[in-house]
Amino acid sequence: MSTRWSAALRPKVLSETNRHVASRFGLGVDARLVKDVQAAGSGAKWFEKQLTPSSYPDAAADAVLSWFPELRHTPQQAWANVKSGQSNAWKYGLAFNRYTMARKLLTRRHVQEVMVDFWSNLLYIPAHEDKSFPWRFDYDQMIRRSALTSYKNLLQQAVVHPAMSGWLTNYDNTKTGINENLGRELLELFTVGRTAGYS
Image (cartoon, rainbow, N blue to C red):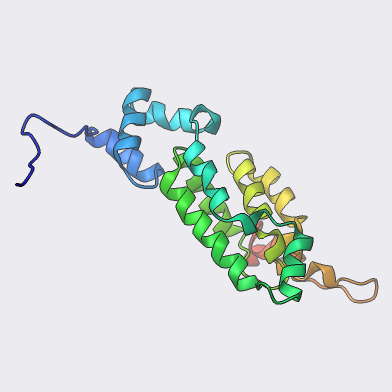
């Protein structure tokens, strides 16, 4: 015996304008997002509400962290696990990548997560890089907290974060040997650009 949808049952849909906003600033239009946009009154009002992430309880997305307990390891634990051969940077990075994808699928804080993705691409640090992996999850949390603040605030936190120091080998600076990686990227990629004429 087969079951068919009743002709009287109609899925909730958004108007073209509201669907455009939800598609542009969301992570995929689904029934939950449609409900949130309709509850807000319009796509524009939903967007405004999204700028205050705490407006949307996000228990399902927050619970994703419990699926990947290794992401809660302190940097000291992570280093010790790698040194003893119990794990490696690649495994920590894989857990982080899976966490990130699952969180995007379950979140109700779409605009915040879109901006986390945007800033993570600009202020890039690989998930499994050998010198930064113990701090990579904490770096992601810092970006999430600051994703909807000013770029100045976010950048100040990013360039002093241990994950950034590891990735751009800032730890390698000495009094007699300056490692310019972080300084160069701060100018070339993160702020004024190569054509600004800095020396």
